[in-house]
Length: 408
Image 1 (cartoon, rainbow, N blue to C red):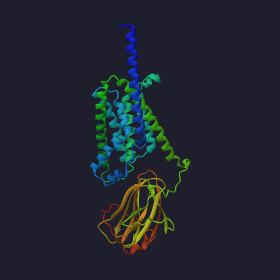
Image 2: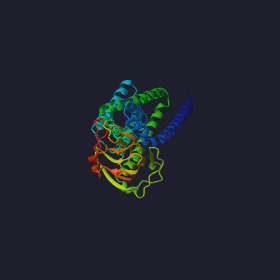
Image 3: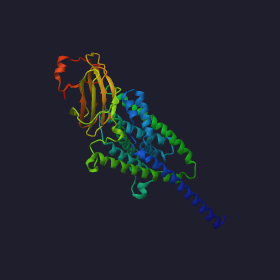
Image 4: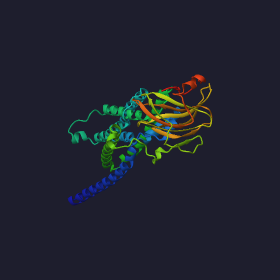
């Protein structure tokens, strides 16, 4: 074969590789841009998910864990980076198992012991872990830093521990059952693993098929550089969120909720369509919920009386159960009007029975939360009307879900 033909073949191969590189760059770029909005909320849970887990049931915890992993693009990107250059099932099983053990340990331990970290800071570190694993894949330590890379097995375990804190921090935003806490956490973690295995199987199938292509080497370089970029952008976005939460006064955020936002819609309960008026409130009450504790606040209302209310925290989200207990009941029965996890709520209630009506708040945060409650209507405050309890004490059995307080 002549030198001229060899040059033509070489030029043709280079052109093919360049075209493949451009195509792969375009695909990875579109993929990264599409997922970045999801990256910044990779651990977020919808209100439907919150209500499902509040209602309990280990199968629900398991299902939520699986769907949470499948929507947690930062975790999936990290797993994708781990298996990208592993060609044997033995190596894949070894490293993925190390990651699983790492995040399972911190997920269970941190949640069971109520250890909470700022989730923006955790997600920022998770973003860096995605960049780290991709940087290791392209042998960046030797190429660009002229040093030997750290022990990969130890790094996978360590980064798995960090990912577990991220999962735990989000899980602890929900009011987990105190009676079966460990079983619920384990169920959630089993769901996480099922979701991870499902995603991993699909990744392995695609990568195994792609390895046979002559363009795999080019694609692998583009994909890992894309992972480095995605992890870096995720780090910057999460650090921006961390700055908002740690120094909110620097961002000129008003402490008063906007009356025009959808999140501040007033809630009408028990068939009363009237929204509460925020002027001329009868009472303004400050309530402190202790760190990792709970508290109730109740009014006494007669049948047919109307209570209008509005409350908000000093920024933290709390699980709450707005409910009522019939006067004279000794069975522990109570009727829930609304259950959710929010930082504020407002609405009106026209009672269908005489008794105590109010809120149970649960604080999973490591610091106290202050609630400002505004109310008006025909009611008696139990913290100011102790004579009511002395005249007609309400006996309650141990089956009651919440411990009612008579004073704050």
